[in-house]
Image (cartoon, rainbow, N blue to C red):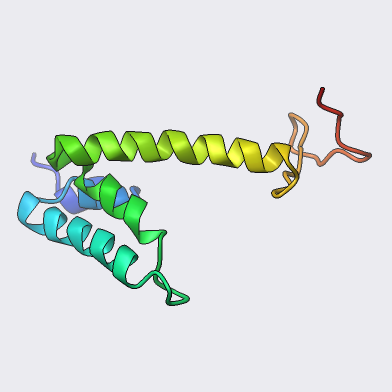
Length: 109
């Protein structure tokens, strides 16, 4: 018995479904997100967040987009670690059973 492709994609997010979409659908959507993210960046809702999503959608179809997507992911992880270390972003620490720790955060040295 054949499976319905819609039922297979039901638990996946939008990016995963777009990556599995046919090329004639995912390539225009990915390019549109990248161009929209660069042109509409000054607007409040649209902006730079559209570029990595467009790269993630294009990655399976283009080796160049795949490389850029990997580099952007590496850079964003490095930037997040730097911003946590320098106090720009605060992270709530939790114990293994999910309860929040009380008291000051541990000193890193």
